[in-house]
Image (cartoon, rainbow, N blue to C red; front, top):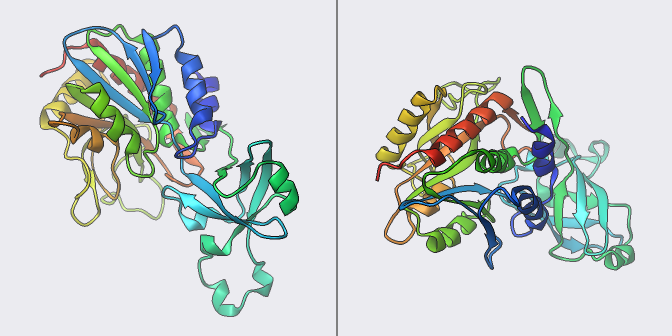
Length: 348
């Protein structure tokens, strides 16, 4: 496994709408490995490889959750808005990078010290509107550095290898998927026309996939993303039965917690094809019905006249925490499965 590449894509900045840093890494990495790379006006990257009568669109989103400057007070403290599904409880005390146009500044997220909180305040969750970013800079300095309303802020986190083949890092959702897709593109000899789309703005409404699927007009769609691994304390197996190290996940359905509305009901033909393919390749897989989230596959499925679609997800602990834990073996198996998708005829 190319840990240097995974580290590079995990640590690259790129909140939704500001994916420039990660996009440049992907373009450089795939140069010479695919037939051509294109970029649309929205920021999606399209890597083309192979020929054939059928077009398979495979997506991995390059954006990450993060923050954006909302207000700068007279002392230089920054109030922020959240971009994507950022839980308030993971923010306090995080180290951040403020991406000014002229300078990138380090900072930390602070709030009122617990010593001066009232008794009822101490018992409550500190919400993000009670927090601020402290870079040490004055307001005049921030203006000089190009920090203004709308400047992106990323949480500062590196990749660390844990025991038993596990890795923890920022934005594994979905930089792990980006890594898998790049590695499969390098290794596979497709029998189909593959259009690998590295989509933008997934975390704020599947926007990149919505745009790109209209352009690609695929015969079949597969989204690569992460999903919730529940093999840790304080969560029941029936809530999240997926486990690290047990293989990639074939998502059967996902969506809202109360009804699975607004999500994906994967095409049964696609699920069966992926299942049979995994068995032939001796890849162990898991299956999931996920309540509480969805992926680019939903947008692809609803494109134009409708596209048979499915989703392959990599198990991740602590999703959207800025310290997501994944398994090397799951990622390696995912690369093999993606290569198999590219190298086998589609059942349509």
